[in-house]
Image 1 (cartoon, helix red, strand yellow):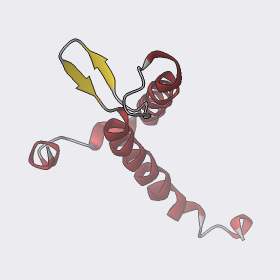
Image 2 (image 1 turned 30 degrees about the horizontal axis):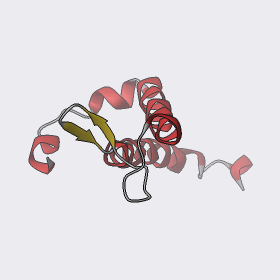
Image 3 (image 1 turned 180 degrees about the vertical axis):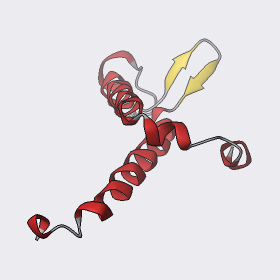
Length: 86
């Protein structure tokens, strides 16, 4: 997965920050859906089971949250040099 992500062009996220926010809210909906739509297995509700395939939304959420925080901190350093930020 890391090799595949290293060849991905990340410049599209820099120009379109709303896409990152949409992905973030989709991940939040996936995590909230765990409470309602997922069967409890050994006392834990953490995997969506769709036929023979199981899906863990925390993996996708980790990647999206990393991208979101990178976008936030890349813009934050510009604001730190302004006097009004103090």
